[in-house]
Length: 296
Ligand SMILES: [Fe+2]
Image (cartoon, helix red, strand yellow):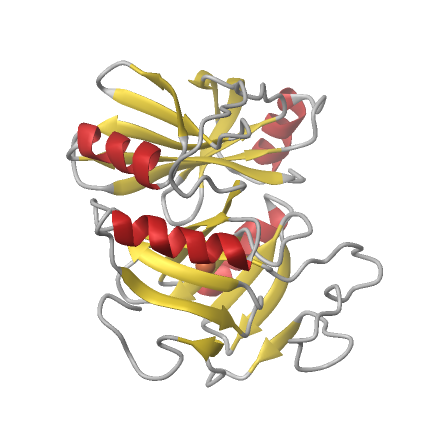
């Protein structure tokens, strides 16, 4: 099985590359690692790649990369995919930090890029923008949540963290409560992508940075119930929803099997569970009740 360790970067097409470069660098505070006028790669200031852009077409996410354990043989990954009847292809230089990857489609048609070796980008010591710690998770609307869950469990090695009813699943590949989530919808599309910031003070600063750049929040700040992250959501110039979050539940030890205890947990110890489908989306915060412009 492919045991994914962490989320790498997501690749988007965009109708306006220059506008997106301005947003990801000046507003979100990522580092522009490489750009040739048709493509652009961004990393966090700490050196992990997060976003790749390609000029042309609608604003869509086409590819998603994940790192497996360094040293793992990619041929072994190819053989395990073949054994599962999944066609794969070896690709080189998918990003400045990734020389070689095995690629294949997930059931919703996103090209998954799996690699074992990653070369950190140079640390960017400049100040400015949100400057997140890391690219944290990707949420997708899909028609068949069960099918996606099985694929991410059986092919990529994800674990189920929580279900909300039978329509919304949160999955982890490391200590974080969720790195991917899938929610049932008639029209499949990306729901949002999320970046981790250090703490609540950084969420506050994020809101100020967004306001200064005339980017409106569409939801939050709030504390979610499932996952318990504090989160604030906005839309970027390509209308993509972007979440900035902190204080997400952590499964520090899989054998203990519970989330690190936190005062905001509803029960002790809190373990992965199936929450009722009518569970509120948040414990507190703007937009905890009712609907709000641009969301969900
Ligand atoms: Fe999220």
